[in-house]
Image (tube, rainbow over all chains, first blue to last red; front, side, top):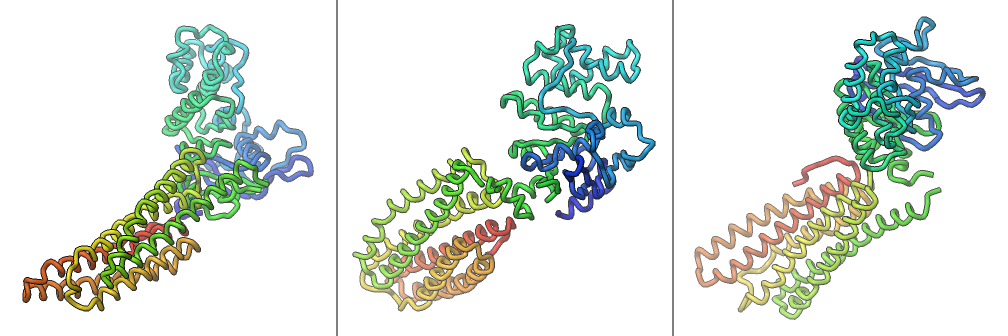
Length: 258
Length: 219
């Protein structure tokens, strides 16, 4: 880890010796990481290395899995999110998530975006502007403004994914977690999502799990390499792709892994 | 386990390194023979040396093509990226050394009636430049940073000899204008040798980058 990464002060996300088990199986081993505000952090590593499990710890999505046990700390803006007084619904509002496969609700484009704000009790009269703002921020307003009442399922895969990003933005999160958001998209849609992530960085802190190494290199400021449940190396992206410190990182990103 | 496609990629990287080393062998030969031809004013050896240039061009083009293919098709990362980038730069330096050696090999055809002075310091310069060339290539092969730095450190000796011979030749020409034509060829010769040593330094810098990702200035 270079000094630039060691000296991250006041991280927005911090894990301290985070371990996680599914039943008997330990899936995360003593993960410690500090992620600064308004940055894009990419997590790379082979399938089953714990990347997705790790980001699911950041908004307690793993709570939904039976027999899941967590040890260690996750601090979001300095607050331990596994403390007993934490409201998980509020936490997930603050820490939004976008998944691999676009998963719009089977309802209109408008209602998809309005869904979250409605649940959180936003006034009807404010909804229109929230929906428009979210769709604009997710770079899909131009394509949908004249058909907000159409079914979200009529959109293309890339549009659906941007709609899901709009849906996440509508509840005004501080952090957005992306779990392989472009793995099901063509290169043009992928480029649009990558542009979008780069633009969102100024207002949000972003953590993205990706199998696409070039994508990690293109859009992230920091990169973490996971292997067998351990965070092997975490550093500035430039450092990781130019001159990684650990041999297993080098082997993975140069395709010599195995 | 890595797949067939990845194995092919690793093979291409190895091949690239080997091609640069073979180019290096050829450059050493051309440099050595060009110097021998100028010392002995051996026109036959000089013309044999000149005839090797097209083969160097072919090899250079082959190396560049495989570098462009690797960059476009394989997107090398980390140490692979550094290998590809440094071989591109080293190949350019080797090609310049060949260009300068070819200039040297053209000198015997221009000098009539022997050298204006014994080539003692000039031979020393050539020996050091040859040492630098040999060792910068060896350092590239083994990624030996210390060897690269040691090779580059000898550039100062070449520079000192260059200035000493330069001054000596200018003084000789001032005293005897009839030697100007022959002496000027020697001035060019030492200038070429000084430049060859500089290109060896560049190669050593590329070796340090290859091995450590650090950018250093060695001359």
